[in-house]
Length: 350
Ligand code: SF4
Ligand code: SF4
Image (cartoon, rainbow, N blue to C red; front, side, top):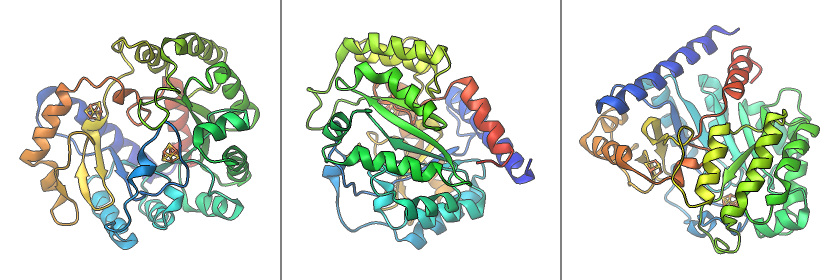
């Protein structure tokens, strides 16, 4: 067990506990335990349930050096956080790999989601060498025509499968997961996707609730028909399929698709402990509630404790957006998954 990893785990758990206390008391006792760099704004796909690719605005982004210096500053101030990279497609952006390498140097665990289409053999080698902990590759269907139809570009599924194979073939690799968005087009194959993930040697698969946005948001919305499919997925998980979502989150997916409020645990908002940096340096906790200042022009610890930050936190406490909080960036994995992640991390495997 590496002492630096033990120290990180301690700091991370401490910040998680403090963020719970802050949320209860209204005081700011914690520091971020999840930092998201939205360093990319470009995506090469045209998914029917996504609008991100329409927002591609060239210019105005931090340079690679600025991202790395920001990461160093955050690491010095808040040592117990996990870094997430992305918005759009992270490997379409040149700063992604240098930021990941810097995270490894600083002992900051990093995770990343990708559509997989830009991850050829050489890129997979670079990604594995950069020391990422977890990588999520989008795979919505085992049928190429369905996946490609959802993703808006022919040939996408073949590239995603190749990316997974390249990543898995590295001896020193991150944990590799598939991610599938639950839509009307793939309802019948959710357990099959989970079985495939196990057979293909992935570390698991994570399912995502569809947000109602994008050009095909109505055509792809499954409504309450999703419930029976999610029941079958839950049965597969009970039988041992490597599904990363907790049962509580899957139950809440059923409520969400049926137009009902979340039932019980598994739908907590993580914005309270999150620090998101937009590509121009703007700091946010929650996208709809707007920014609190710019990380390149203001002292970050001061921003974190500012009146603007407190106002957003009050809004987060009141928020009732049940769809948003079902996104996997808010989710807490099942206990078994968390225990497995922690053991792998402490042993230095990821
Ligand atoms: S869902 Fe991901 S891959 Fe698809 S267009 Fe949006 S950012 Fe790109
Ligand atoms: S909109 Fe609501 S649920 Fe989503 S991040 Fe903001 S506060 Fe959390």
